[in-house]
Image (cartoon, rainbow, N blue to C red):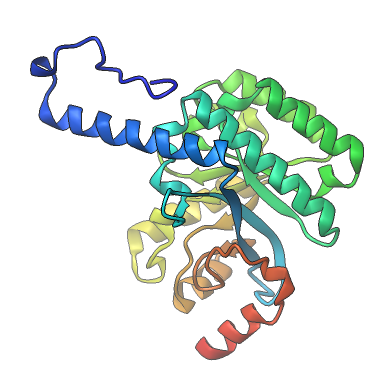
Length: 283
């Protein structure tokens, strides 16, 4: 589906199941909403801290999560629209806006590192490539403070292209993170070839891990695999102190989740005491 055209546009409605028709209508409406937000520049980043496991009062970096405003002014998180737009040109433009906003944020705040999400489909997209090139030319330190996150699902659509793309940009100091690791898409052969700098373990394995023997086994295995390939580890969706302590105990390098801070459009580095206050209340 591109430019909002229904994939059932040439099929008589009587031949489309009610469920498929409803899903297609929803996706078309979502795509139109995101496209309108992009036209009106109603986009922003929400920032969430990623903290060091051994020193959770210290932020290792922030993740900048794209948000759009709908026609009523509500802030819509990416999980509500990303599936509908990722494979479209609107998805490519959304990646460009996220990158451009992230680069501006890094330029204005020289003391932070920032992770920005992208789809492997944006590799070679002219505007995205041009925006990155211009950003790095304007400030050589930006590359060393920029982390690009690519999901497992996206990376596996064009694995050979991702390998070449990462190799080129890693030589310029950019860090790459494999997002949602463990969601079930990555071949171990490609994991070896990708050379990601870090993996972010999918929250499905992290929520409640301190009391879930099955997820404990799987999480330990993913941490062992990451360390074998010299990759940094980040646990996503950490929501409770008991989970955080268990993850620290098995050697997870960093943690991210509502326990340490929810995504916020107000730059959290302007309030460095917020995480410490949260930790003090739950210790």
